[in-house]
Image (cartoon, rainbow, N blue to C red; front, side, top):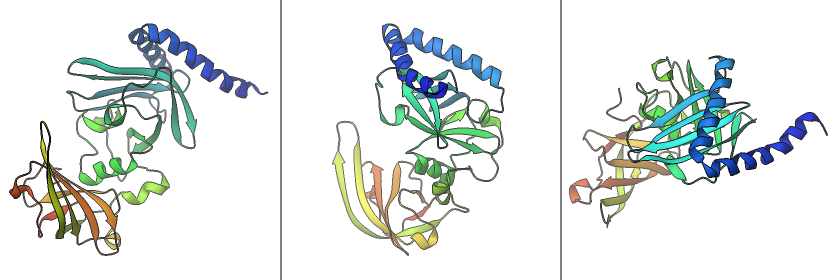
Length: 279
């Protein structure tokens, strides 16, 4: 057995041991992991392809901080208005252009506020992003919509701290299989038919769900999963996602906060892949 293979066999043991210690005091375990990672990052310098400190969030309820390095692994914390909601650390392994994370502690949360177990380093000019392996479409939507490259620290995708002040020229370097998700120019069109529309009243919010047909399809660059934005009227609470695409048309799902009739989509609504408030 080679030395490398021996180390690989030791990884689960090391992670399990570290997890047992961190379970007694997760905060202390996280702090120790972060200290080791930052020491390694300092020795690597600023030119490493992905090592460093990353952040994504809105500055209020969701603030995700991730530090990672090749040998010291990763450290993750989700903090918000009420303190720290989740924390974890573990090892990092490079595999086929991705970073595979092995968690020392059981993950407490899934979804938008959690940390994906596989991250893809994405370079964009002088910037460094970490995109969850199952969130390439969402990241492409942010780029097409004009939310990225962001001009401040806050955003939906992990960005290396300080890179928000750096240039992002051209397009992000996505894996080849996702490259066609990035548009050369915004796609625009209109709703040509509304299939159905219903209102669901929740305990706090009322939502209207509709399906509609738009006048653009694969021949215009429209893809399943793309996000569209209403133009010609201020409707920031409206979400439009492409569900099915034909050559000349596409079926979209529309969600609007509020159930009033004036919020129901109608034929003639115009849309764009770029958000109207994006600069």
